[in-house]
Image 1 (cartoon, one colour):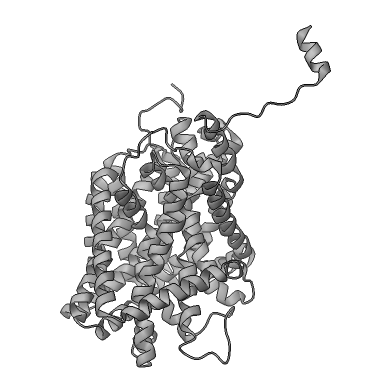
Image 2 (cartoon, helix red, strand yellow; image 1 turned 180 degrees about the vertical axis):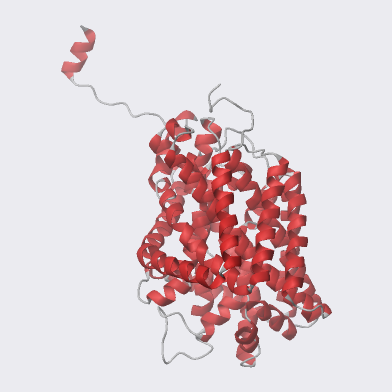
Length: 527
């Protein structure tokens, strides 16, 4: 039986060994000499930002534009996954999309990033005569942009369309290499395909690095919250125990599969987040949040192209926009596979709407509620939030905001719960995606899913034990791994429209135009 028809789950030991070995090597080198490792990664990071930053900005913008164009075109009605009716309801489906890595990263950054941009206005909008009140909208809009339309689009739009075509419509394994199928053909799935193996390996390394980093940072946030709420010492040991506990929950969720554990955790997460947002809206500066959200969203849309293509301050870009773009691109293949798994029966229009429009708006509103509240209290009492942020870092920003809100302890406890569940949903969805990459099967072995979830947590806890700087080194390494992955995500920009056209013909949504035949051709055919 060939690879296309063989339904038996097979582990790709080459991808497993090289990607897993690379992560272990990274950990060992960090343990032996974290300073030297940090220098190497820092140099590679600078190289990536300098020579690939502009490419990433253009790539994300093109991905969003092509995705939206497909949704608005006649191809928007194309059904994906060879299924007439969706497997999941709208709420379940969007909940699982929202609880992927981008949303969990947003939990950590929602309180701190708007304050950073408020205190130091992004260079594109910097104005020496700007008052503190005037700095709110551009600061919040910059955060919206980083966690908005283009960021979400690169995670599950055009690449997802190509993957679903290769896997569900053509029957090939669901692996990152499948993104290249319309361009290379079935030889990309050959065991001896160097390009195919490289695509899978770099995707696993990128998503592993990108998952371990946020798990570590969210572990820091939980550790700080436990100290704030219950006076539990916020030590490296405590943070490591927290991570191990949270990833154990994630492993149980991953073991139960997408249709049970991951779906349940996602719905719980969205439910808790909605309750928390409503609570913040009622108890916090309600009208300030609503006004700021509308104004900043309008400001972002008005300046969307300028923000997407800004190249003025390379240092600032490397610290913010290009850093985020590299991080998100590294997750592109894994996220596209996960969204492919849960999106059967959806149309292209529904996919683009959910991933590139609804998810960004929800994320932006979350930033407006959490970060916007922080901006309000900082305006009312300068230093109320910024002092904690500058002295202790982002984990302290959330609790500083909660101190200003009525029933702050209750709200802080709610935020702790949301953070805990987000850690679990991040680890379980990404461990599932890596297991799918290793096997090419949408139902990978349970032991493989659990293994990767525990590996993510174990490495994050170990790096925290070395020191917070090791997690930050890993965070920079994410950007380095995005270089080869970004090259993999370029072809779908022009392949997705071609694939959509093929599926539209198969589904009878369009027909071939009749080509006029010349008199000579008619006579030749008649004879």
